Image: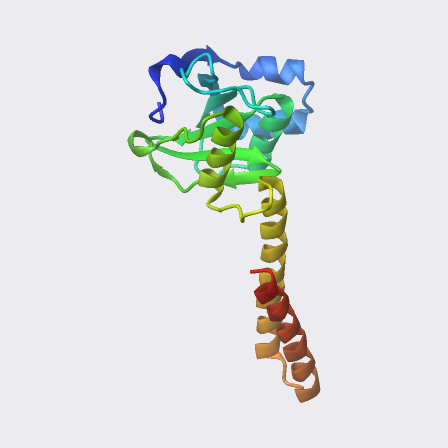
Length: 203
């Protein structure tokens, strides 16, 4: 699955009832979880033991691929975050609905790929050790790159702050178009220039 080596393949179902019981989920959490997810299977385990030539990382020893079979395409992202918190492992989620899939990973925040046919989905292993392989997977799924001299965690924070500024700019532009009072319109324009300056500086 996902173009990973045969040596990584495993087949272990995670019964939802066992998850509910073990982690003492509240009724509302169970209902939300059950409404979105029909089945969870561990389908791959990537480690130096299953991929010859791959070295162990300082932070990442292995990671698992979980096939999450969805009941509907529109699902609550909180359920994926819940799974990531309940199972203390590095994981890539293959969220499958009918014949399509999107990959998800949690690293500081939740990242997704776009939906694509299950047969076309690939999870390339790029790097000489597990730390680098994991970082490259997070960047590939999250569609971002890490600038020279910063860690992946720092880059995620930088990108998050940038997105906040972009949203603020969009809000101010909308307000500026609707504002009729010249003085207030000018104040909004000044705020807009300041935010654009911040964005340009951090680009």
